[in-house]
Length: 260
Ligand code: COA
View 1: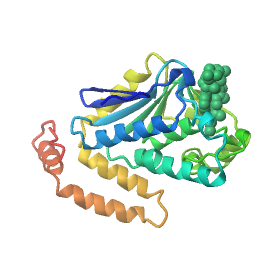
View 2 (view 1 turned 180 degrees about the horizontal axis):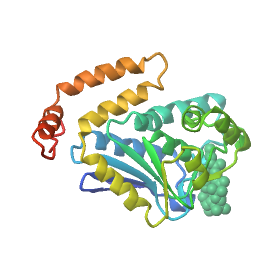
View 3 (view 1 turned 60 degrees about the horizontal axis):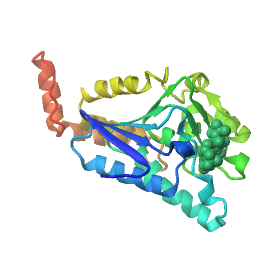
């Protein structure tokens, strides 16, 4: 599939999706959001995709936010629709994606960029990365899940401070805040993410998919995460991966998961 604003490359089961508008610091315009949606949708049904690494092109930015030039003249109704569509098409879609999604934050992750990184299942940053939700400096608030996901990751007080000050934190502070799991050099970032993806791929991807669902249930209103866990735990027992994993363990051999 040919895209204009993103690059996709599958290397041995690891699909790298790169937001590719470096002259605009990879800002998310509508077309880019649509292309990301399509890339994820295709990845969902593609058995050759096991893990996704999301990153930005160039050395400066992961994604510097939603494309401000596209929405500066929107009405209240259009603004609401922008947030609703974006959340459904991309941010919630990524957060609930059944295959692991790692954000490799290679530079500025601001506004929608940080929201995209936070929608991923976990984050790694290079030491030049800068993260923040500067929306209130534009007279608006984060609209792609930032007011919900930032406090989940860093705690309410820190999220309040970051959002109210519209400031940026560097990679080390993000690590200290639990916003990212690891910090590497920029040169090592993608290899580091790739190594983690390889480690993940040795396990049952069917079980991982259930784990994503159960973990996410903890953060859903009106859903009892413990019940989701029980449901998903039970579901695993009916899979070929469970047969293989337990049999391999009992026979003291390495599991070769069929992925179903
Ligand atoms: N939307 C649209 N265009 C953006 C953008 C965004 N969120 N972020 C950067 N760009 C564009 C700039 O307009 C500029 O385009 P131009 O060369 O056609 O003028 C280009 O990307 C390079 O950005 P520039 O501001 O010149 O780089 P810088 O190194 O001086 O500053 C930032 C980098 C990230 C601090 C600055 O670009 C910025 O503050 N961006 C907006 C961040 C933001 O508020 N995001 C939240 C949006 S809701």
